[in-house]
Image (cartoon, rainbow, N blue to C red; front, top):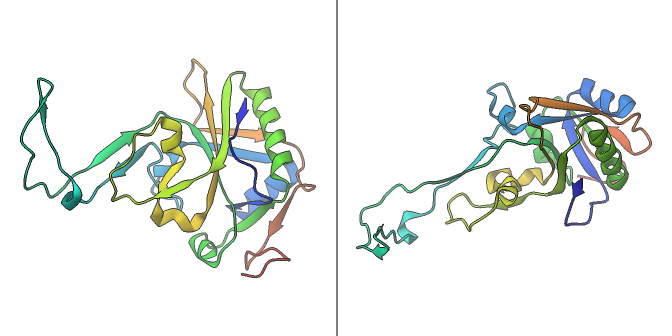
Length: 217
């Protein structure tokens, strides 16, 4: 079941190695990786993040921390210099796309090609059908990432809202992500590969300098 609450952009972009870009165009092979895999040291700095947790470090000068005992507030704590809040999330699978192409992204993803998906509606429809053939029970979300400061006191968010929230040092990526949850009783695979068939009618490879023919950087 695909769920989205926003309109799709006119184009989406995926940065990847040349081999994977060709496989995506020619055979429609799309990979969704477990969130745990994004902590691997060998990933690019632009890719590496803890996608299972959001760690906030609010400005202590603006906090007033009051302990509660027996449902009664105590005296405000003083001298707090380090305050951290961590929200952990269940595992899920993810594909990271982008809503645009910028010089900063070309620098962050060196020696990679970019696949432009110029018909996202059709792409998601084909992906939804491919997932349904392979996984009987699933929830498939699509949408843009919301970027926030790591140094603010966070609002109360549910797991899906946390998954679609990243800190503003990544905001240059303009991420639009696909999130997959499964209801399988067996442990999920580290990576799911879905074959959509040839995508040359709705996708094309953009080679360096990472720009569309009708778009200047």
